[in-house]
Every structure is written in C-alpha cells, then in structure tokens.
Length: 368
Image (cartoon, rainbow, N blue to C red; front, side, top):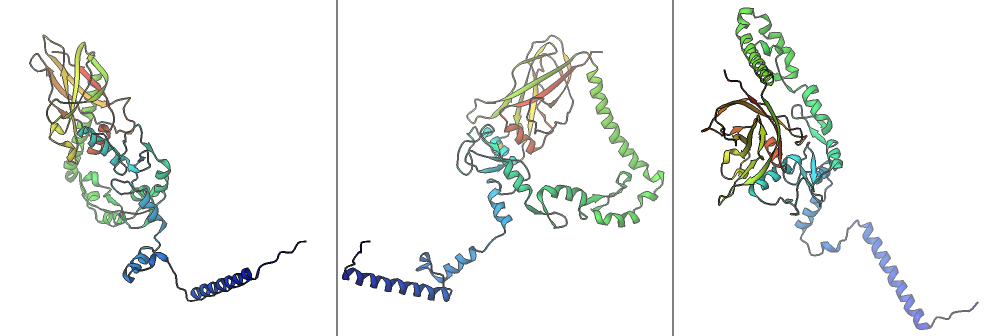
C-alpha cells in the first residue's frame, strides 16, 4: 500500500484548525449550560420589543387557531351555514356570499372576492364540505347555560336538552302568558291559575283561538274553492334582471310574455319599491305586479297568487301564498306592486341567482 506524506506546513495549519474547532465547541457548551438563547434577529432590539415578541409567541388553543383560519372572510365568524370558496380558496359563509352577489347585481358590478379580488359567481365558487365538517366539530358555548358543546350538537341541546332554554307555560293556549327557563317550569305549574279557571273565565281565550283557527280554515277553503273552478291558469315563469334607461340605472325583473286563460300576460318585479340605492340597506324586499298585455272588450275578474317554482333554487324556502283579487278592464291593465312575504335573507338568496323561478296560479272568477 502506498504511503502519503503530508508536508510540514499543512500539518501546522491542520493543528491550528483543530485547536480553533475545539475552542468553539467548548464555547457552545458553556453557552448551553447558561441557558442563553442566541438569535441573530434579536441583535440590537430593545428589551421592550423582545418581551412583546415573547408574549405574542404564547401558545393558543388549537380550536382558536383553527377557528380563525376557517372563519368567513366577510363577517369573520364561524358560520353553521354552508361555506363557499373562491378559486383561490378564500372562505365565505352562505349568507355573506348571497348578500355580496345581491349587492353587486344591484350596483351592476362584477362580484369579486374581498380578499384577492378574483371574479366570483355561483358557477365558479364551490362549497367546501371539509371546512363545514371541521367547523361542526369545533366547540361552542351554549347561549343559555354557558356550557361547551361541539357545534353539531348545540342545536339539539339548546332546543331540547338545555335546562336554561326559554319556554312557555303548558297552559298558554288557555291564556297563561308566563315564559322563563325550562327548569323553572315545574315550580310555575304549581302556582299557575289556568288549570283551576272555570269555563266562564276561559271563554274569551277560547274565542280568540277559534278566530285564528277559523281564519286559517277560511284561507284553505278559499284555495280549494278556487281550484275547483273551470278557468284556471298555472304558469311556471322566470324573472330575468333588466335595467332602466335612467341616468342612475335601476335594477328590475321581468318575465317574457306568456299565455294564460286565453290572454297575454307579463310579470314585473322590483327591489325595495324602487327606493334609491337599495344596496346600502340591510332590509331587502321584493314586490311584483301582474300586467295584462292583451286588448280586452270586457272586464276580467281574477284571483292570483305566487308559489315557489319547481325549477328554482332548492335551498329557497317556501313562499307563503297570499291570494290577491283584481279586476282588469280597458283602463286598468296593471295591478299595483304586491310584496312577496319573504325575509331579507331569503330575498338576498333569490337575488343572488341568475334568474328567479316561480309558479303563478291565476283563477278567473265566473260573473254572476
């Protein structure tokens, strides 16, 4: 085997390097025994700033960290509703998402994500089911007893199991107006006077209950009677958004002309009764009018009402039908604007859609 000879100069340099390395090792051991943490970023920082950095580095609960990440980027809250995300992954709860779409539609602007400003719509935003499931497993405090439950169980707890949940007296139908926590209900029932009242004392309460029942029964009988007539028109319609020719263009909706009861009709709708700048208000409403487009020689006595359409958004709640009565003639071919009985949140959900689907029932009354 061949031997390699190291020159004397290299041997001296090597020995010096070895000594320096050993000195560095000894120094690092001394520093570690003194429990001093060295950081190049801390050089030159005042003590106050260092203490603030150490204070901010305190460990938070995992639930708090996850909650801040999965919260809606608009309301900054963890919602129990559906969660949507833009193409870049920014999260929005269903309520804020629909409100944002409705606002931009009324302003005739392209809807953009509040974080990254990418274009968003119902076609390019998707639901994030994984985020919804994670949120359902995060803890939340009960509004009544202040105990902690996971979000998927809090609704059942607050409505059925919480001893502090609000309730009313078992004899409320007999006129008792007591309300309080569920755990106080047994003590109230011991002193409630309604079970001991005579029929003479309860007759007024029973009359009020019967009047309410009779009104509901009358409404149902009216619908049944209308559906039993010969001349009935059922039309599934779509309201499409349009804009006026004014300087400040206003949003309105209109259907195509349709035929019902051998006449041509059209439905038009508007937001907040055409008040200026409806996008700046929290309260939203939608009203519609029925317009007769055909020329007539005799009056038409008509009853009509609107229902949820079969091809509309399945998440939209049912529309409570209200029957309207109007007599069309040569001078009166348009009804007044009639409000739909829906909430502001439901109105935003309808406005966020590209079109509004509904069903119109029209019944022509026989002339006496």
